[in-house]
Length: 538
Image 1 (cartoon, rainbow, N blue to C red):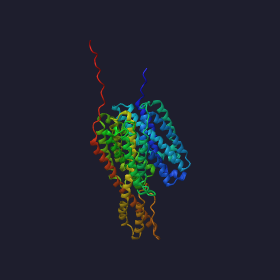
Image 2: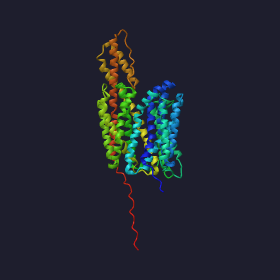
Image 3: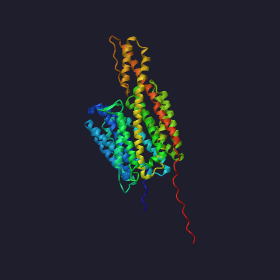
């Protein structure tokens, strides 16, 4: 009696259940920061580390976790990772101090790193090549949508039950995923000789830690001194040196189960898609960050309302991604991805044109829908193109590499857009302040321009807040109101102008991605079975 093969879609659904929980968990905590600060008495730096420790650990460990999946099997790594993530979620929900919460988030990220690369690796093992496009489309849409709607879900949970339930709500879902994984996920991909490349793992972890830390903390330290003589450029430079050393070490041990089989990078389509993934994920991350700043700072929406508006694009992408996957299976990934990038650019251009200081979020709707369609269209093709010719024996390493690249793309995009928007803000605030000052009484101009200068020095902020204005004595209530209204209008106009100018960054990244698509070659056709030879006639 032959053993029945598991339904690949049921396997994928189980994997995506875990992936979705972790994607939402990575961003939903952002909306809980004020509540965590009030409840635990956390400092600003501690609150930053509650958020950043997850990103940092995930970026450092995911490539090693992918290789562990090749050695010990993705099913085993998935179950272990989900178990760690579940236990850490409970610890996060029960934390009584900021240090306890940061430590629990650290462990939670370890679980996330163990799980993340296994789903993409398993797709390559359980789906035939002609059906992988649709599967990867669903995978990509789930991963992207989970991260994008995390703030909305987090805001709803915090409003209804408090910040602790952001973590505790994970527990029953994770337990369900563990049970399903034990039942439906097949044990595939294990090897008999298990030797992890410890030197490569150490060098890769050091490189990823230093570079990611530098990108995350660069803005906090004004890209200068971290401690003593150590600066952010030195930290990133040390990470790049460790990365070069990692590549040298890996080249010398390709015959001894390396952490990164270089055969992956020799595949031109994989390497091109790695760069496209950085530009695409970086562009999406930059767009979402700018949109969040614009909705809250220029339009004055609450964090929850802004999250709902931003969820429009991911919601559209979920509906489109399966169609995109089937189109990728039928027509190939290259033309589908190019169409998606063009749609993305069109949606982004609409946002640039309509994102005025006094616009309504309704004005953004056509652009958000276009971006959502583009996100759905662009999720599947890069994964399909990158993984098509990869040998299943190194699929875990390839998946871990792609997941690491996705993390880097998001981190680089956020760092770059933050620095660019910061530089744009000072000039745009000066311009908007000059226009408003001309309409004020002469005695009101000095306190007005002083308030705007302080706002420019304060840099980017999310939310309108209150502008500190040194109101001269003896002013009537109407003059004070006029002064404050002019300052608020100038701030909103300047913020909107800075955001619109910074939107050019993701636009340029999209153009680069379109140009890179010219380097993609046709994937190798699947080998056809040899014809059966007729028996010789005697």
